[in-house]
Length: 141
Image 1: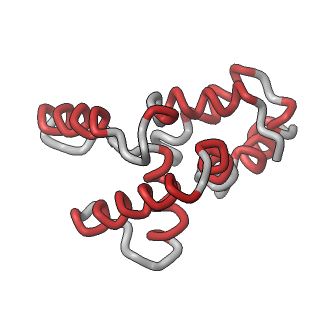
Image 2: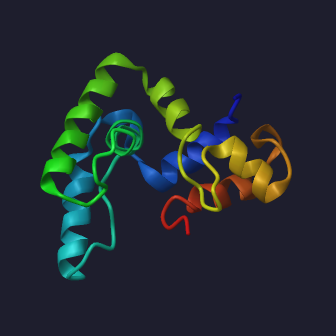
């Protein structure tokens, strides 16, 4: 799909502000999320990059590996994220992510979600609608 740049930017701002500046993992983001989770005595913030989320979505989830948050699964996710960054451009990673991310109500990808929520293609949504779609990634249901 031709996904407008402002839609891409909305998801990057919501999910991975340093997307273009890391090689699959964002150490600063992981440290920040770890600190916030420690202070809150539970997991309230994730530190996964878009690349890590794509790795989890395509390879871990579809391979049938349990989605529990374990060190083993996180390590596999990190290795897969590094591999994705080696073999694909940032634009391709973002495209794959945007076309497959879960956005609630059984919708996978921004095109499907845009049609479901707004009755129109992602190419025709507004900046406000793009922001709403991007916000669904934090707690889809």
